[in-house]
Every structure is written in C-alpha cells, then in structure tokens.
Image 1 (cartoon, helix red, strand yellow):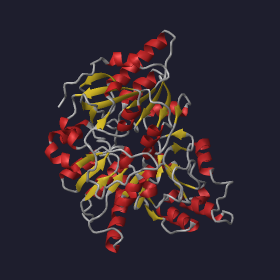
Image 2 (cartoon, rainbow, N blue to C red):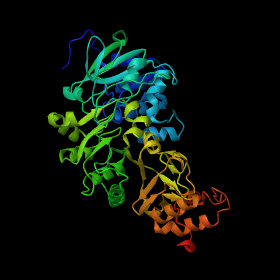
Image 3 (spheres, rainbow, N blue to C red):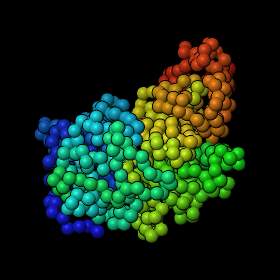
Image 4 (cartoon, one colour):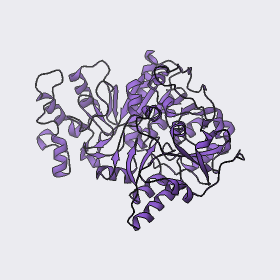
Length: 499
C-alpha cells in the first residue's frame, strides 16, 4: 500500500537533529502498540552525546497513554525528559517520577485529545507518529494504535512520520477515525452498536507540516504480562456468577452488554475467564485495548468483536491477526481514544467495566495509582472514564499481597482515585461487595465481610467499631495505622489480639 509521495525520506538521526531543546514532542503509541520507534531512540542518543560535551538537552514528552521501551528506556537513560503526560506504568519512568526527576501530569485519557486540541497543554512542537502509509494530500494511515495521534497530527507545528513496513497494510480496514467538534458544537455520535462505523479509515495532516519520513521495519514490543493465578481465576468466578445472576434477574439483557477490560495482568486474566464461562453468552468488547486473551476468544466465537484504540498484543498474537485478516478485520474497530473512552458512549452502550486497583478502604474509595500514597505505581488512565460511567463497574484486586504482609482492604486509602460516588462493585478472590444503594456503614460491613482477607477482618471491624458518630465516621487517629505499621515493620499484619 505504501504510496509514492513527495515527502523527504530522512534518517532517524536527521529527524532527531531537528528537535530543539525544550520542545514538546508528541509520540504515537497506546501501550507499545503503534509507538514511534526509531526517532525517540535517535533523539536519546543525540541527547546523550550532547550531555557528554556538557550541553544537556531535555524535552517535554506527550503520548496517548503508556508506551514501550523504544520511547521510555533510551530517553530516560539519557535524562532527556523534563515533563511527561499522561498515563505511565513503565518502571524506569515511575522511578524518576518518585525521585522527582521529572514532572508527571496524570489525567483521564478521554480528556487528552480535547486538551491537546484546545491548547491547554501548550504548543505541540513536533509530532512523531507511526503509520503504514502517507498520501500526498495528507491522508495518513495509522498502524496498530490510534490513541490521540489524530489530534497530535492536527495540532503539531511539525510532523515526522515513521512508516513501519512490518505492519499489515490491511490495518486500514480496522480504522474508524472521527473528530469531536469543539464546544459548544459537540455533535451527537451516531454509534448504536460497538462495531458500527461512523468515521473514515485515515487521519489527516497538513502536508506542509511534514518535515520527513523515516522508514522502519520493526514489530511492536510485547506488553509485559504474567500468566493467570488462582486469585485472578477466583475474581473472574465471582464476577461471572454475579453477571449470570443479573441476567436471570433481567437487569442484564439475555444477549448481554459490551464489556471493557482495563490493562494489567489480573484484568487480562479475568477477561479470558469470563469469555470461557458457559453461563454467559458471547459478547462484544468496548474499551481501549485489545489484549491477547481476546484474540483467542474471538477465534473460539466467545467474543463477537472488539472496539478499541489499540492492538495491545504480543508479537505472536499480532502476527496471528495479520495472518488471518479476513477473519479479524471485520471484527476489530480501532478509533481515537476520545471515542473509545467517551463517557457519553460508555453510558449509552451500557458497558460492563472491569478495572484493577491497588487498594480499597472500608468506605468504598479506591486507589489505582499510588503505593502507600507515595510511590507512583501506575496512573488513572481510562479506569475512571469507565468506573464512573459504566452500567456495571467492577474494581478488582487480590485481597493481600507480599505474602500477606500487605492488605488491599484498609481503613482509609492512602490516595483516592475513585471516590465512593464512582464505585459500584468491589471484588477480590475472597468475594464480591455490591455497594449500590448501601449507606456508609452498610458499605463498610459488606467490604470487610466479602473482600478483606480473614487475617485482617477482625482488625477492620475493630476500626469500624471505634469510629465516632457521623455520616462518614472514620477514626482519624487510626486511619493509617496499617500503612504506618508497614513502614515501621515491613508488614501490615495486626497485633495478635485481632487475629
């Protein structure tokens, strides 16, 4: 499909030499899928050479979500990033955030394209975007993710395109790209079914902005995932049983509803387990990523199709898709993240959402980003886009970690990402707490009884009993005792009197 076009072919080093110190650079990629590869590595190498001559440079880096090592490792090793947004889960980036070596801005992924279009994040100096083709009139056919790339291309002062010959030219059959108009003229999105299409198969760029094309032939990096464990299987069993009962009660229709699964090992395992549950019918995925478990379920007719913004697949799974595009192309739709994560569409389609968290407290608030309130472990990403607006929302985690030394259920979370107003259903391997319609004390008892590990239940009940009167009635003098005990002794395990 690669078109003859008038844009100059340049090397990655030549592209990197154009990007000036302090520039805001927007890279494509939603997870490692579709991430720019050659140019960020060359930019890091240039920064390292300049640092050796005591001429340090740094850049402000914007991406659609998390990305892979092609962007993260080289630039972080070269200490060439001063500011980063939005979502991050890469270990080296998180370490630099914790050590306050770079400024990190975390916000809901549905908000990113609109913030870029409105100029809230400042001028985008360069966009570096991976594609499979660029046509002389400015039509650009993106690769294995869409994310916020269409907005980056529209708003950037200058554009560098990495044409990656590794990807299938038939990816064009999956892309469905539209654009929200600016307030107050937001148009209605005529999407009634997750697999409907309303846009075009390409993004657009002003041809005069394109300063060069860099040719690449490289697979997306494999996302890091662990195999499913017993806790993940048990969480999936609780959710599947709950949903089967909701169908029997008539609260979920017999042909089911679209399902969203966030990124992460537990959620990926849960999605796979749900897809194999015989009590649930085949369903459609509506979310931001297509993960490996979904590909197998599509092949087995357990998932009918998926709407997402990214093929967040291992190289092996991605090659299976490319080898069988006649099967997968009609079943997968890739859209910009302002649509996949749109609160309006999530509500209209009645999505069932499943997302992971770090900890929950007895009042129903959850933390999905910060370990012990201090250390960035992830970012809010799409989780609150879905948790707040889904028809049914499950937030999941194992009840304990580190061999039982850390309890996921605590008296008060050390950082709040989802307030009790957004939380519907909490699930651990111990059980499921349906919090809908429950007052604060009812929520607390349900969470302790159903989600907390038995090693910690007596302590949590004692905390609840010592609470002063009030609508929300935490004992502030004890609210962070478990966290403080962890810092002091390396374990949250309560005293013997509570065991």
